[in-house]
Length: 92
Image (cartoon, rainbow, N blue to C red; front, side):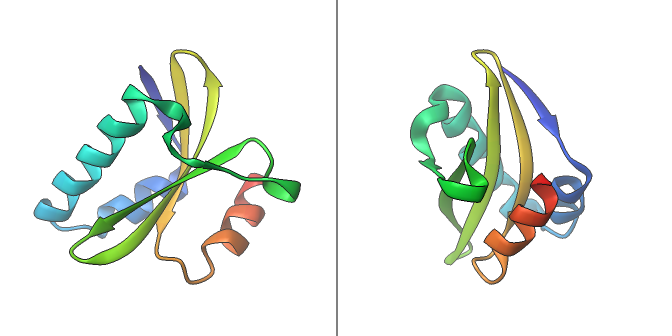
């Protein structure tokens, strides 16, 4: 599976420590194995999936878009606070 990343996703991952990056890698493997594992969004965010997982006992959300059967575009990563607002701005 090919993963494309946006600059906002890269910025968010740079802030993570090594153990947190391992947890992110596990989440990315889960998404790669089954892209429908995330919650499909509706309305303004139609076509975007959000996968919820924990990093260091904190809920973390990962927004991604399925481009085709073999590729995903990782949009952003962050906590719930303002996540959907930022995701909406990023998508436009």
